[in-house]
Length: 118
Ligand SMILES: [Zn+2]
Ligand SMILES: [Zn+2]
Image (tube, rainbow, N blue to C red; front, side):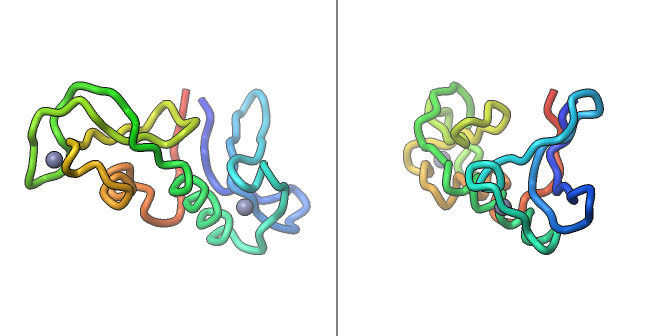
């Protein structure tokens, strides 16, 4: 199990958002890994990864389900995903397939929380 969370450096000099695994250790994710840097606070590290996820929203998923938009619920074959993330998918019909609604239904409209990936 990988725990995605804000990681504090062992020497307490800053934070990065990343993945922690009890057996294989921890590594940074997103912008914290692409252009290595540390954040002075946990909140800033979570905001950094939230922005990284929003920058990678792609409206090109192919699925078969009902539109996630509450007032719609129409069957659809289109959806949104986060590039490089095989876990999150929002099903949205062509009418509701916008970056704004994708961000809302992918639950990435704020700082990144904790999640677990196997
Ligand atoms: Zn960062
Ligand atoms: Zn819809």
